[in-house]
Length: 220
Image (cartoon, helix red, strand yellow):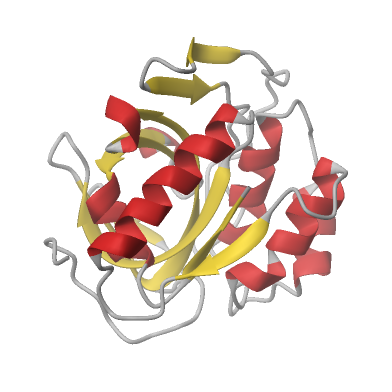
């Protein structure tokens, strides 16, 4: 199903610059220093079985333009009370200045740090636009994963708009964490390591599915 998604064909992970509140193209620019706050393991909103749940995230911004994969994974693992060094994860994922190749490099690290070989699996949305079946599957996967007390990690590309009307643009690709849902999974909460000023926002699952299209996500 088509949203207002704008997609380019570049397949590398995000190189990002802050420009007028938006995030665009590969550059080597300074990023905000990671937070040193203590881990948060409790849920901010816990209404499992009532159509909504949101997990507590110990958020940290990514330290450079190409660490979105390790940073999204670190933020996702923080909801389990884990505090994993992003440099060590970057080595395991094979992250370089070109980014992290695919969600298949992130899923094994999530399993290792969660402590279960089958805690996460990779799901691909191979076509350019997610269809209804793929969107329904994404919704179900997010609800199940969050209800299990874990976050989803998604590989996205292009531009999409959140529920407040703010656009988020990652034409070269990016990784984000999905840490909550409401309205039975029709709207989801994103933890985004790229910009601490836009660290958290909500997006419809239809927009997220199209944002992921041609790439994939790690889910329970």
